[in-house]
Amino acid sequence: MAAASPQLYQLYARCIPSGECLLCPAGGRSIVYGPFASRRRGLSIGVNLFPLAKVCSFNCVYCFRGPTSVLTAEPVDDGSGVTAQVLVKALEIAIEEVAGVLVDVSSIDFSGRGEPTLHPRFGELLEAVKLFAKSRRLDVSIGVFTNSSTLNREGVVRALESVDYVEAKLDTALQHKFEAINMPHRALSIDMVVKGLRSFRKRFGGALVVQTMLLSYGDLNNHSSEDSEALAQELVAIEPDAVHLYTVYRTPRKQGVKKAGREAMESFAKALRRCGLVVEVYPE
Image 1 (spheres, rainbow, N blue to C red):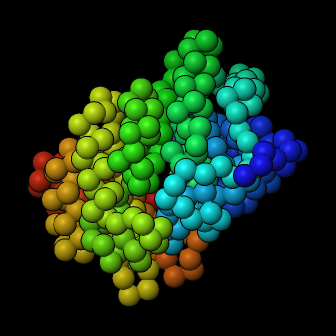
Image 2 (cartoon, rainbow, N blue to C red):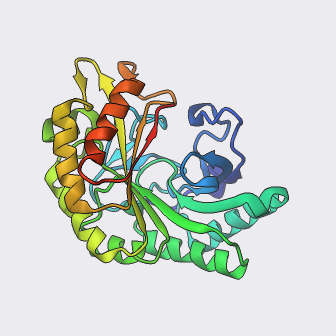
């Protein structure tokens, strides 16, 4: 895609107090956003590599960032033409904006809308953020939130090996529920995702956390005993540092998506802990 005019996106947007991304005046069109209080990462600044379109290999029913604009399993630009120089400029603006709370900012995370590792210049842009943090002597953790679909790609793994923290999605170990909940690109299967996570763990020396969204969607849910047993088996093989269980806490893409109850979440967590896994539960 051809590069877009910078006027079509913002370099930086301060997060609104409610945390509802769909209500943000920037409309997801900022490259850098924050600071925001992450339940897992403290006070964080986010990096969004797709300010013009949500590019992802999934179209999850619960995604609070809305529907996927470009469903792809291959790297693609959204047309914004984000470069390392543009990203660094956006970070400089963000750091100046939050100068008063800079001592409290604990992380810079690639998340935003879409799957960051699908950006064709992901490795280059990640390196730019690391160099920026080093040049500013920022005591921050550099992290990436991923849906795990690209962890079988050598270029992605090589780039991720240098970060401090990776939070990787795995909502189910069952193919039919993977298709119903994550609505992936047709080239993907849950077996491919799990194999990618296992191989990535062997090479990644930082903190690897697997995140699992528990929910109900119509007649389907992913928090039954069958689900916990199947997921536990795969997680034991993956060997993450921790598993984070959470449920719907922002407006989901599909109206039929419902929260998992606290009791169901705790029961699911107990099943995983019995297998020796470290589990944290976020019921709200």
